[in-house]
Image: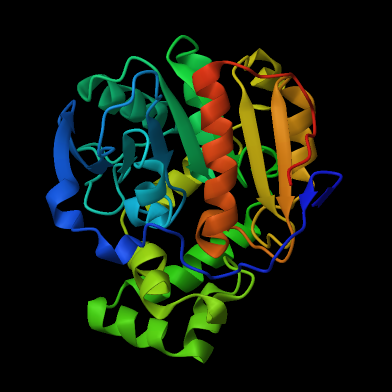
Length: 321
């Protein structure tokens, strides 16, 4: 059931989605493509059988992220359509560009050029936090190619007014964890108290996340060279006046207990993009796709199916049940 866009239903926090990401041989699906002079690491899953008209989904992570931020979502999405997630330059296994300079338009161009290299002439972009801001920028730059937007607690509203201390705090705490090696990552992830301390600003109940998901999906992405320049690129980058130019169907998903970017920002996105569905998930933090993957995957599936069929009715705050 729902109440004013707030989804209410069974408490599925921390429950693994199906297909289980642990059953995927991820190494088989990893690849690299050169964007300019910068090699970009990405993972691609394809459906067992090709389905005509199924729009690919491209997933874009946020600060201190990597493609593994979408571990719980890629297998389910790939049941019906190509699903791709990348490491933005400076994160994961993608190095910073040679000059060390990044920007939101630059990151949007990286995603666009990756899609072109993969032969995608149209696609849905799904972004979390900074990745949501990048996705919105891409929709403005490539309106003929971006068919839909899924924005999970996107930056671009509060961050545009330099309200950055929560993001700095998140980055500092997780970077301190990230500078150590994989053995330390696993050590932190296995201990509920350490996991709760290290991820308290990101997830509502980090102790309820499986240790391997916390390690692979969140902790391992920290401590990368892209954090500081990407944070500078995000803070103050203001899309608010341009949001009404976005004409594609948009799904905005927010955790009601997001401690990084306030949930009130969801109303700004929903009010300024004409064809928007807004969903608020109770007892959920900043990474809804990992905290409640079963609910999130259902929302994503239904939304992208509507994009396939092009059967959207403009709304500003639709309910979900």
